[in-house]
Every structure is written in C-alpha cells, then in structure tokens.
Length: 300
Image (cartoon, rainbow, N blue to C red; front, side):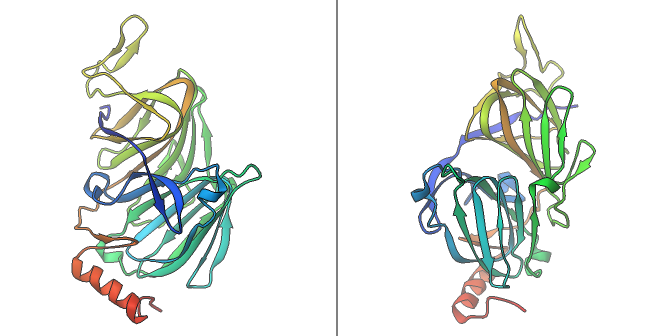
C-alpha cells in the first residue's frame, strides 16, 4: 500500500453567491485540472438566517452535475421541468444538468436557525454534455451507514466503499462520495483507487493526514510520526488535496474528525467555464449563453 501524501492544504474562503448567500468556497473557478472531474465545492453552513434566506433564485446550468448534501435545515427546489421538492438533514440531491435546466434552491434553517450543507459540482464528459437533465433525490435513511470496530463511521452517498454501495448511480464520472467520522485519537487508513483524484474537506474536529509514501509512515509513542515529511494538520473548513497513492491515512485529534472524502477518475478534457455553465470550448460556451438570450436554452 502507498500512502497518498498531501499535495495542498487550503482554507475555504468566504464568498457571496445567489441572491446574497454568505458561504465558504473550498475550491472552484480556475483550479479545475487539480480536482478533475470535480469543479467546485461550496460549504454553506451558516447559523444566521439573514445570511442565507435570500437563497439561489432561478438560474441556469448546463454541462455539469450538482450534488447537494444537507446536514441541518432544508433546501427547497424547483425547476423548469416542473419538479418540486425539499431535502432535509442527511438527504442528498444529485442533479444532472446535462443539456440545460433552470432551477432555484431556497434554503431554510432548522428550529435553531441553522442551515448547514455542501454543494459539489462534477463535470460531465463531452459525450454527455447535452444528455437530458435528471434528478436523483436520496433520503438519509437510504444512505448506507457503516461503523467499524474502532468506531470509524462512513456514510456512502455514491460509489462502493467497505463492501457497501451508495444509492446514487449512473453518474458519468463514477465518483465516490463519503462522509467519514474518525473517533478521538484513532488512526485510520482509507482506500482510494490510484487512478482517481481525491480530496478531503474537514467540517468538524481536527486531525493529521499522513504525508509519507514509504513504509515508515507509522506513528509511535516515543518518536511521533516516522515519516519523510511531517503530517499535515487540518481543522474545520480545511480542504486537503491528495497526491497519488492508494490510501489516505488520518490520525484524529482529541475531538475526533469528520470530513467529506471524494474521489473520481479525471476526464482530462478541456474546460470552458463561465458561471453556472461548463462546456469544452469557448464556442460551445458562447452558444449556450446565446441560447439563453434567445429562449432556446432548454431542450425537449
């Protein structure tokens, strides 16, 4: 086994989206090759209703898939195909925008005013940019929840992990999307296919991610980490981009650690991106916005 060293650690940055929603962006816009097939990750955890209630009114998407994972509160949605619904704590909505959709997402807090969740964008390959739009809405009870003997937990949204498969299927990039919790002081190895790009996003607690690629990557009580480089310490709202290898190793801190672990095989295709539309060429991008102006964006 070869441990994936940390390629980069970044703190998510405050930004404003939609009609004035204050959120944190972990990555997106201009960094696509490092995260391919993923494009963007937004952390919209907020405890102040005035900072999120304006929501994300009607807007278009084409050429991507958006994955919304809610931890607290609800997100009500509607779209140009007539779909309506809401996702609540623990639920996931996986939207394939494909050839084009216009939708809105309106967050509402829980009884304590909390609105917590994430939105991840995954790219579509050129062959599926113009596929018909579709939704997969998954309730919390449908998501496999695995607890290991050491107390490590995994909620498996998409892909196969620890012998279980997540309920979201038919996704072009074949990603793996996990919600991982490692208990205090526990050291855990998590397998990741070598062909995939992978990142972790910490949203509770803290821990250390091993940076070694050799056989001496083990912690000891007397010496600490026997490693070619010190481990990378990560806390709440930290994103860790991993280099190549077939496992991620994390040592949880005193409060434990909880993070998203996402991986996908890169598409290795050119990206032409402006706002909510992602195509392969600038001509395709211009055509999409011309169709928006002309009223021909939506396909039957």
